Image (cartoon, rainbow, N blue to C red; front, side, top):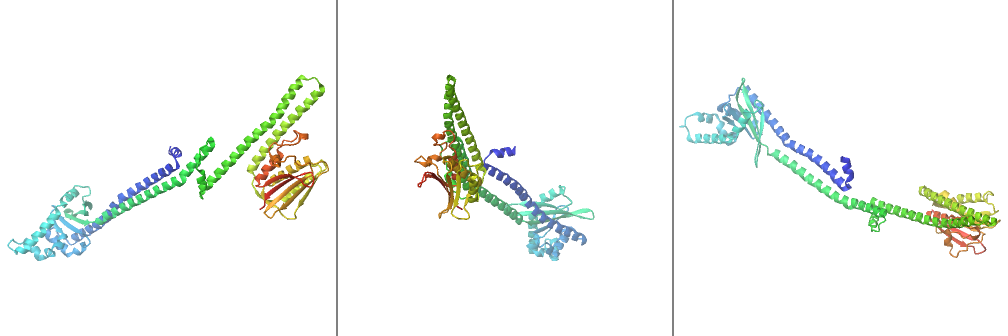
Amino acid sequence: MFSKYLKKISILKKFLFINFIIFTIIGLFTFIYLSNVQPNLIKKKSIKHINVINNTINTLIRLDIKFDVYDIRKFLFSTRFIFQNLDRVIFFDNNLNLIGDTDTLDLDPRSFSTRLDEIEFESLNNDEENQNDENENLSLVETKSLSFENILNEYLNSDEYGNSYTFTQEDLNQFKLITIRNVIKDGSNVGFIAITENAIEIRTATNERKAFVIRTAIAVGFVILIFSFVLSRYFIKPIQNLVSYTKVIKEKSQTKTNIESLKGRNDELGLLSNSLDDMTNELQKRVAHAENFSTDLVHEIRNPLASLKSASEILQDTDNSEQRIKLLNILSHDVLRIERLITDYSQMLKDEVALSKEKMKEINIEPIIKSVVDDYNNIQKVKKNIKINYENDDKKKYIIKGIENRIEQIIANLLDNSISFCKEGGNIFVNVATTLDKFVIVKVTDEGQGFKEKDTAKIFKRFYSNRPDKFGEHSGLGLNIVKNLVDLHEGKILASNRLDRDGAIVEIRFPSV
């Protein structure tokens, strides 16, 4: 279901959706982490409190100190250095009465002296000034202890009674940790010890982590937003333009596309746009070529078909044997012509398919041309006693970028054409040379009747043939195939008549490597 949904949405939506999923997962783990930050910090503090409480209880029991105001105050005064790193340590008796508080050490150390302790229990007729100071200290301590009443009652009623228990109190300026434990001596509960500490650093650390996570989330979201914009502006939109371009080509619409702007890019999308446009143009050329070729083929076949139809109709109505033989010859000639056209057309299509699969490479065309010339000089190939002469300008190599068997086909088609025009015992000259402007020139010169056309470019057109005496014996595709193969090799082909005598010259210029 999930994969099907992703397949239906755009790349940008996929990107945003996947980022949303990842962001949600990271956010979930972050939330869990932040939820555990404060408890972990509180736990570390409470462990410290518990250790102090346990050590204090062990000391009280070991020294056999009673849980009353007198002994506890003496104990606090004698051991106050133990509690220097704690904010406050408070002692309560079994009835939840305050009997000791380290805060009084800061108020008036004299209150813990033996003299002041004695004064506290003497009559009210003693020194009034000292008594007032003592009452002031006790009043302040009792005021501070009022907030512990609910906490002590909650501790007494909780499942943690008998173990150390940590509470938290939080307001605008404070974050207090309060750890309480009851004191058991000789199997009975004698009182309670509470440690309070203003652990504002816990809230500060938690807030810092939350602020860091929020800042990070905003930064990541901002980066994703920028990246989404860049992805949409410079990648998704160009791809959509390419899709629109392919749709326009498919539907043969006249709608203009902005692929030219994409082709100007120097990145992979620019290369893709150029390749796609070149491929499209090449396919359009091939389609147009196939359509034109089919149209020309139909036109060429229509003539012999019309001749066949006329001859067959006349054949049915004549009884003259000579005329019937002549009509049968016409029928046979037209059938052979149609067969030749279809055969040559089929071969041409096969050649075009093969060309699309063949790759250009650097080749020396001299041995290729010499091999074709030697084959045609063989008596099995040449039946008119025509000699084919090979010449060059004494260069060792004639390197071009091409396809070996297509070079053979070019030379063979030109020799076939020259042989068909030459008289028996004639000569054909094949010459290979190089030029200063880095071209390899191949010339095929014959001693035939030459070209009758003033515009010799016509001879390379498809199905063109100017042979009145041999009408129907040639399909008119030979030189057209040569022209197409020369164009494939980025060369040029020209035809002209000889100036010194009758004959024709066909010259091909291949770019040299």
